[in-house]
Image 1 (cartoon, rainbow, N blue to C red):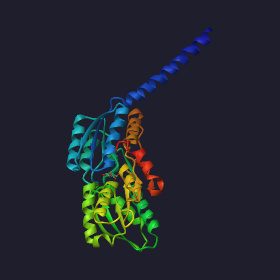
Image 2: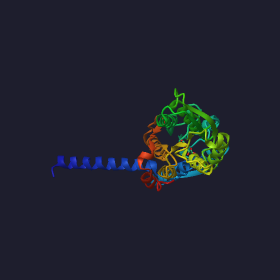
Image 3: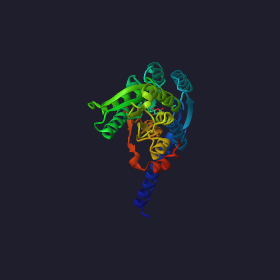
Image 4: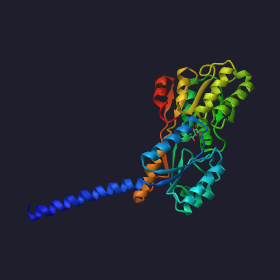
Length: 327
Ligand code: GZL
């Protein structure tokens, strides 16, 4: 080998070693990260799936996830965030149960230079207080549901009852707003009753029972719009117990696309749902790893997709596909 060839061989080897070291360093960036996750609770099938997938994503990336279940209480979430700050975690994930009341604790996280990522819900706080929010377009979801109903009923008069999500939460506020946009200008479509079912099956059934009683046993009700599938599934039970046919006597449209709503659709008892991915943690951890690696700052909103499913979309098959995915 000539001296020139020897030098070329040396520098090629050096270049490969540098690239390899870089990749290992990048992976090392993900390995060993300690992340605190304040989860709202387990109020719905969707929430349970989000928790499962977040833990799976952390495991896959070698992230040490400190998990705290707030049992639907904001004060428990704030306590958890303070504990994560005291532990000096590398980052915090939080699914904020309601939209207000976060400024102080987010300030404390900023002071401690701990990046905060919002999952699936947003907060009414200065955007500088969190790194990014991984959510769907909640207004759009409601609008898709409203537009589907408007298209389905045509000019027929249709009294709608609405099961709202948790009072004060961004999905409850935005899904209501979006649905009203979706039915705007349709004089034949009217929301006659609207109340929170707190995103749970139990409450959804209870409130639907009260709607049915108040509306002549349900004879005056043409459709139910529920801010999530779990409340819709509870309401379907109430409609059946009132001797009516959900999906026919009372149309049912909701949001999340959890497996059980597809079972109801396959039985003709639900009509449409708008999908919300439970994998919010994947994009969140991607953004965090990029930030830790070289300071790359993500956009303030990482939007996840929303897709309408109806009875025309082979619900039994969708159920089979979805049932193993962490729900
Ligand atoms: C919406 C999410 C909602 C789900 C419900 O982004 O926060 O919370 O739609 C869950 O199932 O309770």
